[in-house]
Length: 396
Image (spheres, rainbow, N blue to C red):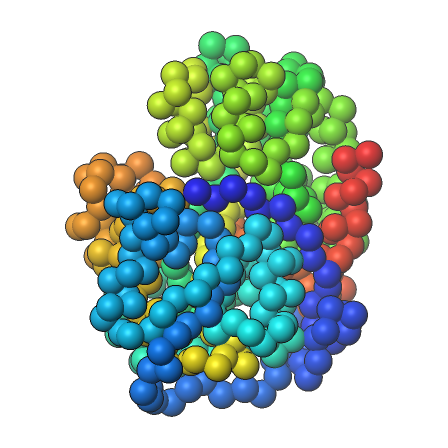
């Protein structure tokens, strides 16, 4: 299960040399940046006998947590590549581990992927060497968080939305908008919960994007100083009504069951678990849409076992395996054929796996950088290091 996504990050690109970024440059013509010159592997060679992975908990199960949950052992038998997995608890930890050069691949979220690309720690990926890539939902391919200038830097793994959950017996009327946790949250003072991460600033920015168009926000991860200040101000106001910021899904379930929390951000898997434990909760995608995550398997530019790494990338997004991962972890699979293999035949409906109209309302996590991701060139956007600083201030 996804236990924590507390994001502690530093700035990327040329303006953030303290993070170890080197060799990248900015392209002011399109608001993007030019990564270090690295080439994707052209052909597959003989497998090296091992592969070292950095992964979120639940992404590389070998039967040690649950004997019935094991897609690592079949991979090892089929490829001869022994899998060594380092479970990371945060995106920042993943970035730091990738810099060591000791790992071959990583399951990076959008808040980490641009940092890995900009620093030269992740190499471009030759999708022709990943046969199952052809089955990946097209809306996940070549996106702002997993590609640069049309070059793929990874293979999409899965996706999920940050939803609004509420106690049906304590919140009335039933909410349809994020206004319930921002503009009218005082009605539930002390019982509002929010995700404990600087990336949550994007949730406030998304709400302002829809409710205060005069701010001109086009992308919740591309905020100039005025837009950023407005989002921070909204979150400081919200802070007075927050009972708890959460990062552990078990604690959030417990808080909703007890009534300590009655409304706030959640994930579909948390809502499902809470309902299975008889909590009177419901989760919705509000009218403004939401933020969300899309994880990407990326290959290290220093990979010592690149052939085994490519074999793993193809394996983990193969229909049957991607279905297993999605169900165990609690997310929508990336492979369009996976829904034929889920044990729960309603799983893909619950997680909106193939509902593209649903995903068009989700703004997936990305790394805020000085070069505005919305393409503006006449302003500088606030980088993620400043988001982290502001988050500390917001929480007081």
